[in-house]
Image 1 (cartoon, rainbow, N blue to C red):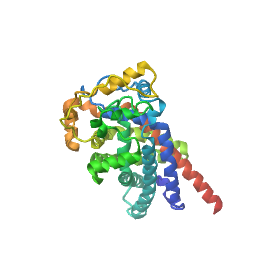
Image 2: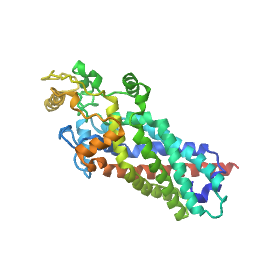
Image 3: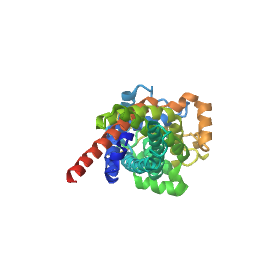
Image 4: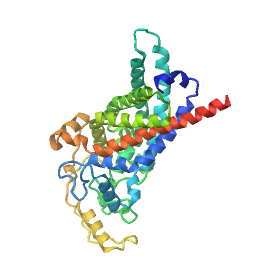
Length: 380
């Protein structure tokens, strides 16, 4: 993967990269799912009064407190893994595509440009090739897996949008509450991947699956380019191909690259979240409830919370919700209404997640490919 290994890499089949990418994607997702959920929630939560404080998350550094709040209100520990199926498909598909394409791209560029011009510093050339290959691999992986990224955001957004019982749904006794009022049925969050796909296609057609993709594609070029360039540079300087070194290099590269592109990621998440729910109408829901009967709900205290959650959206116009007219308008509205700092909401859990996920991804990828190469060598 790095300059010192280019000649060695060519000796091995590219399916090693395919398998290593799949293992690294699933492994990284397993250890970062709660942080990913918290990061998305923070990015989607406006700074003004559009989200009541009872629903909102507090403090960038209150990571465990906010995770506990989500779990307590929304159905326990499994709420922290909301959208995990879509996210697992996303991470595995993305990682497979990314490492596979990177292997081909870097090999092609090294064959084409290495040692062709004696005036070019091979170290600088290797870094440039890593950046270009990483950026191209990121674009390809994003194009292939973007619908899963959108689905993950929609599932993670449950609890922030003004639908019936949205701050307590996903537990057994409240999942159906979003449909208490028939007029709100179309606003109920999806329960499955198939429902998400069906409703998204009905509302926006095929293009709806790529809502928010402009900032997504714009951010992935520097993000993955820097990720691979910095990782390969750090590994090359260490002079080691050990998986632990690769993991540490990945952690550092992940933090630096994520910080630099974070505003674009926030805009992407805002556009993704608004894509699923139709633009606000002037209809006002006036149907209040006083009780909710369910075999799953026997506690009076929980009953009161559910009733309050359902009634919290009564009398509010959907047109009061923010609607962004594309990427530039989203940038403008966030800066105007919420200040520049709003672009960095969820930065702390995001950087922590990025360091862990990127480090785990490179570590597992290197570990897996090293094992496969050892087996390949022993059979040769």
